[in-house]
Amino acid sequence: MHVIVDLCVVPLGVGVSVSPHVAACQRIIEDSGLHHRMHAYGTNIEGPWDEVMAVVKACHEGVHAMGAPRITTTLKMGTRTDREQRMDEKVDSVEALRG
Image 1 (cartoon, rainbow, N blue to C red):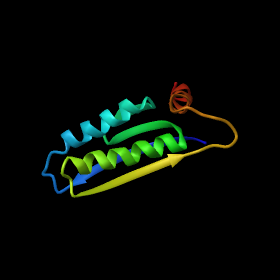
Image 2: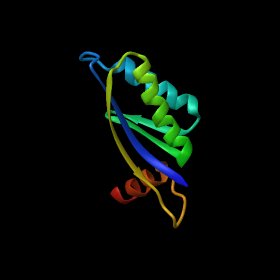
Image 3: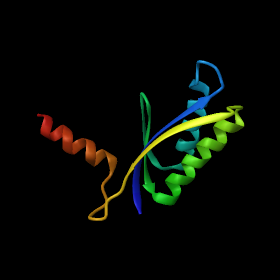
Image 4: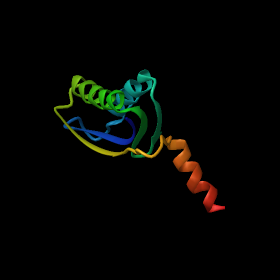
């Protein structure tokens, strides 16, 4: 099953700046080869369900390995059964209506 997720991983107990942890998670996502797009408060990732969920798990493992004792994650996801829709198509359809 194809899934599009919006992932926001927030390490706790590592101080005020979490940029190094976010960058490490971003490298994990990039290394997966899945289509993704980082934005100000997370990253959209799309692909086969099991591959996307494996990347979410790998991000947690990587951030914990950096010394974060806790992580809070927000994960929104969407699937469709009527057709496979890519995240770029979702954005393009709205932008086309904005005029």
